Length: 113
Length: 113
Image (cartoon, rainbow over all chains, first blue to last red; front, side, top):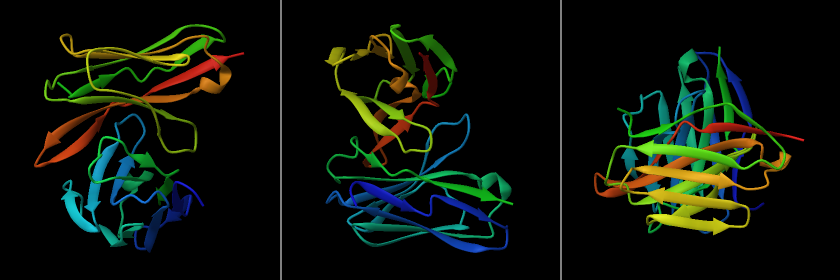
């Protein structure tokens, strides 16, 4: 595997379900990011982890819970989501010293029914 | 006023045309300017990176930054059907002690054979 991978690529869940998104980077980076991409809206930064420590929570609702066990893996745990949370969730990574140069995964297309 | 304005299009051109994509911004603190390309069902990939006013060329692509007018452009010469994608402008700014990317909404481009 190369670059940034994300699983699953597609996810459909009900509002009462609990699911997790997974991201893995194979680039030797030490910063990881979660973004939300909705139709006709700019990419929204959700969380930032530097050296597996959370350094940014961009006022994200608590129904989204990130986890970063090491610099290569990032999870986004989802529970009691709302239909408006349906979007493409993108993971990215970079060197901590170069947050201006981020590499993105393919994203997880999430649909909340 | 939004920090970054980008016309979402869609933009449709014939093969071989010169394409001009643009973003305007309001925050003079933006330091670095990027263009990302996002193919359908893929994550964004970094296409061009500039940090000063002027032009930067890479093959058929030219990125232009005009800091005095707060305006950036991406030109694609001899456009190809494989250039069909959504193009996102992004700018970096130091905020809250760390550097962040602020994205435009993206312009969807279709190059017709």
